[in-house]
Every structure is written in C-alpha cells, then in structure tokens.
Length: 378
Image (cartoon, rainbow, N blue to C red; front, side):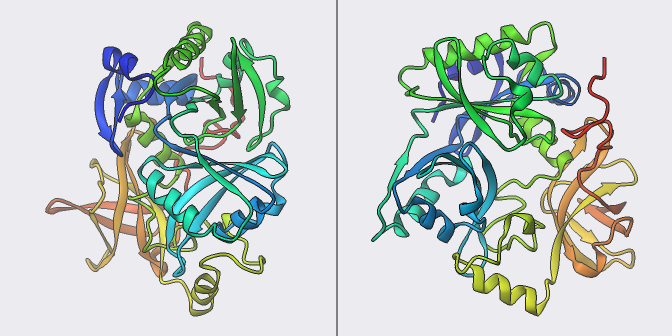
C-alpha cells in the first residue's frame, strides 16, 4: 500500500515496508532527522495510520465500552490517549480518541491494526445507534514535531496556536485545504498532527500541495522531512510504546505503565474485571527504561539479566540514542528489579553489557521535550 506522498518519498527517501505500506525510512539520515526534531522541527507522513469516525447517539456509550478511558469526560475538540483491551485485559491497540462534535468521534489507531480494530468495532456495535466509518484512505495525516513546530505552522494557519492546549484540536485551513489540527504527537516534543479532510488516495495532489506548503513555511527554521527511522528513535527516547513491540494482547495496560489511561471507576469496559483481578493479585512484571553503561545497542529480543546472571526479562525496543550517544531501550522485568538505578546486564548476542534501569523519558526534560524550559538550541 502507498500514501498520497509515495511519489515524493520515492524521489527523496530511502523506502521501507511498514505494516504493508511503502514508507520513507529516512531522507537525509536518521540521526540528522532525529536531531532536527529535538532542536528545531521535522515533518512526518503518518497517513499509514488508521482513522475512523464513530457517530450517532450511542457513540459515547460504545466507546466507553470498548476503551479504558472515561469517554464522557472528553470535551468537544479534546483528544485523549486510550487503550482497547480484550476480555483478559490484554491490549488490542492503543489509540487517540477525539470528540469532534457531541456525538461524533475521531479514532486514530496504529497502521498494523487498521483491519483488526475495524472488525473489533463492528463486532461490538450491534444493537447500538451509531455509524462506524473508515476514513483512513480519505484523510491524509501529517505530523509536525519539534520546538519550532508552532512557529512554523502559525505562518500558514488562521488559528491562534498559542491558545491550542496539548491534547486539543481545532478546525482551520491551510491554503484551500480544510484541516483538523491537534496538539499531539509521538516524539515527546511539542508538535501537531494535521488531518487533511476529503483527500482520497486517488486525488493525491491536495495532500502533496499541503506538504510542500508546510516545507516552504519551515525552510528558514530548520524543518526537515523525517522518516520512520527517526520516528522510532524519537519515541524510544520519549519512552513511548510501539504496538507489536512493547504492547500486545498478552500485555496489560498496568504492566505497560499505561495506567494513566485506565479508568477503573467506570461501571464497565471490556477487560475491566481482568484488570481489577490483576491489581488485586499483584503485577508480576512491568515495562522499564534501560540505559547501557558501556558501548552497545540493545535490540528487541535481547535478554535482561540480574547482576547475578539470572534472566529477569527481555528488551522489547532498543536503539542507539542520537541525543544521548548511548544505547537505550525498553523492556519488561520482574517488579523487584524495576527500581531506577538498579544495576542489570543486557545480553547482546553472546556478550553481556552493563546497564541500569532508567526513568523515562530518557532525556533531560528541562532541555528537551514539550515541557522544556529552553525553547531553542540555536
């Protein structure tokens, strides 16, 4: 499968296959694109993700049943991160839920789960007054991330972005294109996701023009097109999960440290009883950040060992951090080893490397990330 910008990516980027899509892995290079986002701004084509409109008088009831968030608390224009669980509390997907109107919601899901999620939605909709519409191929989606993202976008939108709080969105225009802009993202930095409405795949010109408008607006502020390589290293530094690596149907939100997105106070949602049972019985493993203390790069599947050499877990995502200049990763360990600064070892091939449990995000949040105190690195 291809997005609206395939011809651009083919001309300018090194392509890779991701979730069945031909996507840019990098343009100039993963490290330079990564640092552009941390220090200035980067733009990503994220049209491969799934987008669904859930509408109708029972839409809130439906979403409250299939997701862990209290959907009733989401206000018009607001978006919240949530989890969809199976009956055992395992994670079917992690999603963003935006309320566009009182009874109209936009759901954004992972690219690999587009079909699975749609089938899950339909399986739990009978008897309810609602419509489920897959708009993935009719709404292009870009992400502009980095400390200069707001400054760049403000040049081309009428919306006052200073008034757009994190997690909220609003309607505006870029050129002649009607777009929904949300202050959200997957890098840890301040930034925005842009949904270009009424843009079918066969009519790629509209999305292509908007992409170039944004690139031109950011040309003097260091904006760079970025691929999936930088997207992965950025989200690992920020401590964000990737579905299929760090979360799946065998892992619960509490094990993944996603409990902030779970509201057990709701009367019911799929998986609630299993999650309550897990809390009562005690969580046995938990997701942690890991920093190597010597030169090496942890990768998914590497064993995590105690100082005594016992296997205590496994790496689920790992990389060399372009910002920190060391190997970092995430993985699951027995809870007794989850305290920050706990010394451990990571087995990479046949060799063990010294490491320690680390708080996430990995970077200094006073200098990087959306809550930074230092705005510019020029």
